[in-house]
Every structure is written in C-alpha cells, then in structure tokens.
Image 1 (cartoon, rainbow, N blue to C red):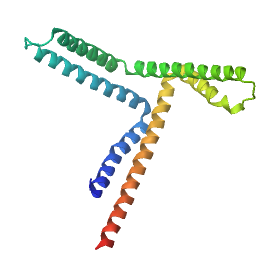
Image 2: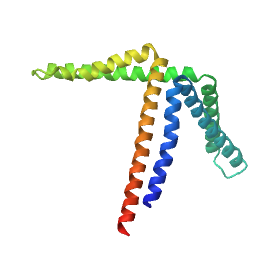
Image 3: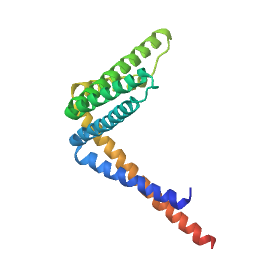
Image 4: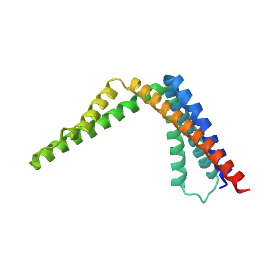
Length: 189
C-alpha cells in the first residue's frame, strides 16, 4: 500500500469514530437503544436473506429438504428476534447488562474462592493485593446488577470517550505521517 493511501485511510477511519464518539457522549440513553436497533436491523436483514435463499432454492427439486427447513427456521428466528429487539430495546439492554453483572459476580466469587483455597493449601502469607481484583469485580458486579441500565449508560459514555481518543490519535498519526512523508519526498529530490 502506498504511504499516501495509508494516510488517507487513517483519516477516513478517524471521521466515523469521531462522529460515533460524539454521538455516544451526547446521548448515552438514546445511543443504547440506537445500537440495539441497529443490531435488530442487521438480524432482520440476515433473516430476510435466509428467507429469500430458502424460497428461491425451494424451487430446486435436487435441494436437500433439511437444508431448506433449516434456512426457513433461521429466517424465522432471526426475524422474530429482530422484531423483539426493535420493540423492546431497553429491556434487552437491561437484560444484557444484568447477565454481564451476573457473570462478573460468578467470576469474582470463583477467584475469591480460589485465593482462599490456595491460602489454605500453601501455608505462606499471601499479600493483601491478591484480593484486590476479585473484590473489585465483586463490587462492580453488584453495582451492575442493582442498576443495569445506568451501568449501560456509563459503559456507553466510556465507549464514547475511547472512540474519541482513538479518532483523535488516528488523526494525529495521519497528520504526522503526512508531514514525514512530505519531508522525505522533498529531501530525496
């Protein structure tokens, strides 16, 4: 790839991330619903493609009936789930965050149990900071499970900040690369 193309693609990558980061920071509640609706639209398109292929291949007598049935079932599941996501985006956002909190809770309890069992098996004193990560995960999981939608908003704001930082650093990298490219071209002539 030519260096100028790399610089151009770097700038092209930074613009959508900048827009996404600003959108996520300005309206975190709406962006959660919007992202879930985008996922629903993708699932709906996938379901429609499956339905189309099942219907168009249905006229072929040589096609395996099981494959056609699988395509119809896939189309139905995708489209039903997409409609549910479109109708109830906040419910699925809350459910997803609650399940994430539950998984974090189970992981933290497993880690704490592992540290305690290791301490009983090996008679040496363990430093206190070995408990820091599992206890922090336990607290985080409880906070997520108590108020999942607020936790989702905080996660969206954090994601928006990360997108903005990435877009800014990508843009700076493109500008610096362009200047270095220009300097190397003028110096070689």
